[in-house]
Image (cartoon, one colour):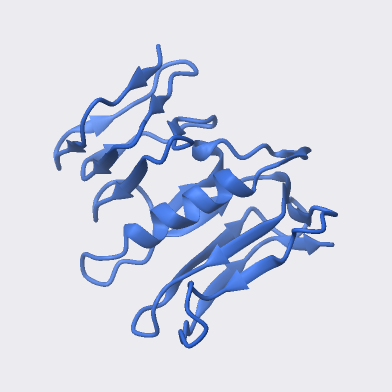
Length: 173
């Protein structure tokens, strides 16, 4: 059964978060912090469409945050930019503990997108995207006048963003 947060929530270290069936959490405008173990799911588990966010602690999961958890469609025709950006933003917010770097993970599939922003600061590496291999994971830029593809940087033109990590996928378009 789906759940809607009505306040910020932290899953403490030592506890685990597991989703049964196709259940998901609607974050509304709140933040979910996962410091415990997250049992991986192969479907959307977080709905951040109303402005909520998810942050992972040092022991929450592997260093990969699945774009599917945020609603990315691996079949290709649907623009998954919002879901992929939510996973990237979550990975960026989760940087911390002993310099731990999270990345967005893209399972096997074809993901259509308009624009993705890899933001950050010059003092730390930026989260990137790791796919299931160049023959398995494909990103296809939508043929859209507003599409700018992969943007590396933040909101300021003077921002020096340094390193962004990409591995295991093909970029088409």
